[in-house]
Amino acid sequence: MLISKLIKSLLITATMGFAAVALAQPQPPGGTRDVTPLNPPQPVENDGKVEVLEFFGYGCIHCANLEPRLEAWSKKQPADVKLRRVPVAFASRSIDSIPIFYTLEAMGLQEKLHQKIFDAANVENVILGNPATLNTWLEKQGVDTKKYEEIQKSFSVQNKIARAKKMTTDYAIQSTPTLIVNGRFAVQQNGGTDRMFANVEQLIAEARTATKAPAPAVAPAGVPAASGKK
Image (cartoon, rainbow, N blue to C red; front, side, top):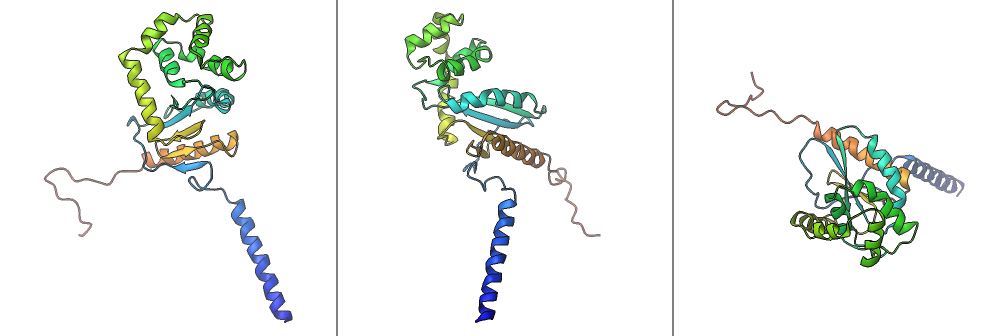
């Protein structure tokens, strides 16, 4: 009986030890609740850069809080990393972010007003989901609202609006902010902002390594490939 109790005690101790070691190990991408592999992966522009997409909504307080850090983070990235923002198709605080974002982009005002829109919606509680209120707010920012409406109806802006709506579906975006790395992984903010950026940077490093992997040798046309035999 004494030996049996001793063995049981040793087994419990060993199990606890293995569990502690497992918890101490860093979680691989796709193995955490805030990193999800995309199925299927989505295509990215083939320009040799690692693409990071941010899906956001102007009425999302978490997106508003993330924006200053995301902007600072993006400015520190090397030339082979590109950040692209994509407004989501679902509204937050009744704000349809897609037409606002792409219309102001076409007017050359998106960069100037991007943070101001976040602040207006989430800090100043301006009801930007109301068209009349949105127009009044835009006028206060020096925007010609008649020109704004005309540009929003343009073919190029309407194409971008349709594409953003499709991307929200294709990438299966259900919450904001969501960062997508190279069309393969969705990164959430569940573990906090620091962990979000750590996950993104780990995925960028892995994507960079995969991109630089040497391609298998291909024999020129008409020349048989080497068999490895002498």
